[in-house]
Length: 111
Image (cartoon, rainbow, N blue to C red; front, side, top):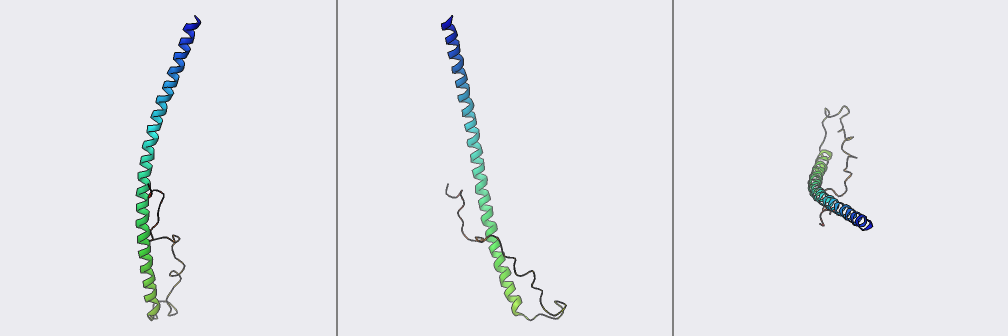
């Protein structure tokens, strides 16, 4: 009777071990898929960020050129009440992204 019980316990333990192994394989496959999806999303986000930074740098350069043109031309009296250009919105609106338009290596680019 003891031998039969020992065999059943050994068999039950083996079945539990095998179930855990298959469950772990399933979890590994699921995480591998999730990692692949997240890596692709990260790459797409990096490309979008780079494009936006390039466009931001271009717009800032255009703004700066327009500011330069505005500063050298003579304003007319009807542009402001006192005859001066309103420059309150022109200065102090620099980007908070110092690397805009410059090459930046993201964590995903090395993969």
